[in-house]
Length: 227
Length: 227
DNA sequence: ACCTGAACACCGTTCAAGT
DNA sequence: ACCTGAACACCGTTCAAGT
Image 1: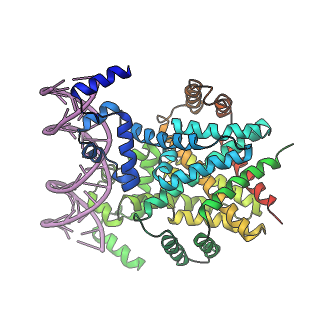
Image 2: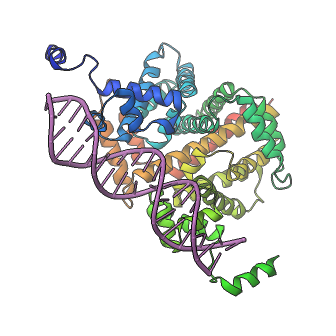
Image 3: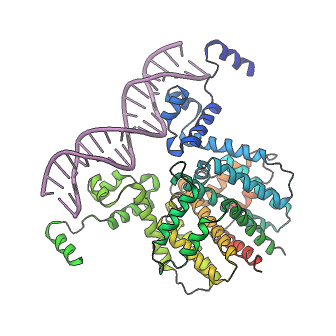
């Protein structure tokens, strides 16, 4: 099979022939470098020097392409996780892995929020369910806790993707947060009495650390329900 | 000011003159009835029997229009909440209010995940921060717990919106979930050892109830950190 | 089997022109 | 001040035609 393909490639195709993998990799490069809006079939065709139809030969449509890019990145994250960690730590490792992946590929957050039931999601669900089972909590608590963890992670993912979309590509993060806090300060303090404090917290908090605390809150809450 | 406007309206404008409110209401109707994809400027112009430019006179662009629709619905939810509930119950009421709003207007979930810092988000943040403060937890715990609650709620919101997008407009919900579970069953059990059980839970669980349990898990976790 | 690229339908947005 | 609607730029997708 592999031999036959190589023969064909040698005879009349350029060695860098198109493939789904190559298309997906190029799509990831565009998404990382220029953002979600920049990924168009025209951008792909020029980068790959082909026609639109060539891409459609390997990929059904844009949704499938986006799902494939997300799968590729998430699969990488999941395989990089050691897997020899103890149950509660394993969940933290998984969550942090996804968090960091979204930090470097913010568009994943949009994808995960948009297309559930894609195979990337299966890996995440499995990565949560397995160590959760090892904790020996009642079945119902396992289910509720797993659902909470998944939704929380997806929520953070979506928000981080939204932030990246708003940042004019290379703006200073704290600069941006200060601008947000300033806009909040203009709001009616009577209407939103606690906005001032929240704005302060917004500026000097560690996203990654707070993300982990959220995971721990949910896990601690689940321990509360242990009979 | 109001008198002057009425005079103008009486003289030479039809009584159903265009306004931002009218545009927003029509947009909400389209979104509710036909889904996110159906909301185009062309659909709006035919429904409102005007030209595209007329809409752009009242609304800067599509993003602003979508933000305005979300604001309108969320504001309604927030004002409908009694507000005389005790701290932990107040948070549950707010969360359930948002959950139900997304159930009837699924597109809100997409919007909340896409455009943070819009004014709808301010109301939600305030609605969480205020009762949380009343619980008398340490400041850091308040901040972390508030962040976790917000991200969890937004995560559920985004997922529910995604589900609604996938459901072919009126499909039976359990039918759909069974289809998902069936697709999961086809996966490699060695690769995803816990998918079978998760699929079972998927079918016979109460979304709304599980959503609330998630809120309670986070709140219980926060109580754990009380000194 | 795989690729090319023109063509199609559709979208958000603009703008000169009207009232 | 507010509205009209043709026009523009751009998008995802299709498909007859090539190799």
